[in-house]
Amino acid sequence: MAGNCFGKILKLISFGESHGKAVGGVIDGFPAGVTIDPDFIQKELNRRRPGQSKWVSPRQEEDRLEILSGVFEGKSTGTPIGFLVWNKDHHSADYSHIKDAYRPSHADFTYDQKYGFRDYRGGGRSSARETIARVAAGAFAKLLLRHAGIEISAYVHSVGEVAMPEEPDRVDPALTEASPMRCPDKATTERMIELVEQTAKEGDTLGGTIVGFVHHVPAGLGEPVFDKLHADLGKAMLSINAVKGFEIGSGFAAARMKGSEHNDLFEKRGEEITTKTNFSGGVQGGISNGNTIRFKVAFKPIATLMKSQPSVDKDGNEIVLEGKGRHDVTVVPRAVPIVEAMAALVLADHWLQNRLSQI
Image 1 (cartoon, rainbow, N blue to C red):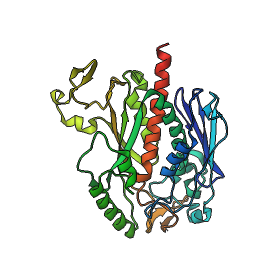
Image 2 (image 1 turned 90 degrees about the vertical axis):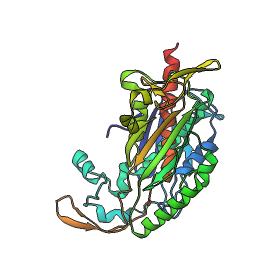
Image 3 (image 1 turned 135 degrees about the horizontal axis):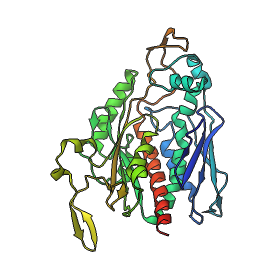
Image 4 (image 1 turned 120 degrees about the vertical axis):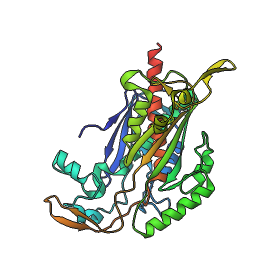
């Protein structure tokens, strides 16, 4: 299986399946001498793990990180960083009923068509449990980005039809983490909870959107043409399970604007040249312009429902799939640290590329 490596200079190779012995990764290209805080990395993993609320999968996993290599006396050595998280609370029997069945909107059919074989236990490699490697590697990348003063944050803007009345350019991460929906607006959080609870009773699921920010980005990150900064961010976000849309800056709203409305006019503030507006989302010509990078990611509803759905088996016979197993009503709150992690990997990779381009 190809496609398990991400990055150009700072590379992540992830491995493992949902119901295998472990999931983990190897980070290559990480500079030596960076102070590594295992507690910070573990806290990032805790934000992603299941069992956080009654609306997410009750699978009980500590997701305790084990660093196998690349760190000595609290600092990175410059050699590959190997890490893993053991799987412990996997109930493979919960998935025996789908051994030969194709679940609607899952990867069952496409995996069979591509490989002629699939691990049906919890989705195998296509399971969102693979994102453990992303979050762990993203935490390492965040520690690296601290040297450049770059900060990354994200929050849930909408769940289903319930959305925040505004899209603030900066939010207090403490407010985001205090919300079970990871939405910094208290009133919107309450409306989201009401919707999620009602949807759970119906055995159905919900999608939503996450807004992400990268603050204090220096101008000059990104490579023209095929490796544009926003193109790499788009690929990173669209590689996350259940993501169906990505936009940066004004996004699709730009299609309804005139050039005179959308252009970010330059001005000088103090000793710096900046822009009056930020419709570009901090990226112009594929290169960061020094403004805050702002993007939005859209997640589809979870495909597994807790009610019956018609489908077919691998022989084309019509079947009825019963809703079983342990699943989220909406993945969006747990996806916030995943979005941040992928953004961190992209920014750290381009930061390293930029250092090489200026030697």
